[in-house]
Amino acid sequence: MTNHFEIFNRFIRSYVEMSDAELADFNQKCEVVSFFKGDIIMKAGEAQQNLYFITKGIVKNYIETDFGETKIYNFRLENMTVTGYAHYNYKDNLKSLVNVQCIEDSVMIQVPLKVIYYVVNYIKNGERLGRFLAEAHIIEMLNYIINRDSKSIIERYDLLEIEYPNIHQRVPQRMIASYLCITPVHLSNLKKSRKISIQ
Image (spheres, rainbow, N blue to C red):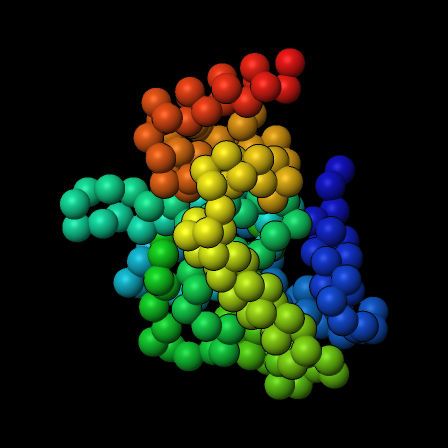
């Protein structure tokens, strides 16, 4: 049986040193939650109440444009945190900047933002953890923008499996096409050309 908090704690300790007592205190303020495929766990423009850590499943971060288009900015899968890109400091009026929707049935550790605030301010090395998590999300988004604007579509396609292992087996092709900013037809042709070149 999966011990979701063991996975969570290994992730935390990969960033900072925390004692067993500090981790136990942190864990008690969080909970394991389950979501179904299609569930929206954060909605753009609405209050962001929690941060999540995925132990099973995959989600997408996206917006809906005024023209009815879906723009996917990234995917989050096992051993990754999920946020609406509002902030890591606890405030009552924080609004999520993106929608977050489950692509698969998922299990996550739910961390209320007020707990993040507690960890950052009252646990040794907590501020460092908060800073590392925030920086990781900022760097990831910057890399997405830079890659989108500077790399060829073939280069970005080849990065997919590195950034998101087994993504083609887990995510519908139309979503991958949205992430790559191309049409599903273009993606299908690209996949065929890559298979031919590999062979």
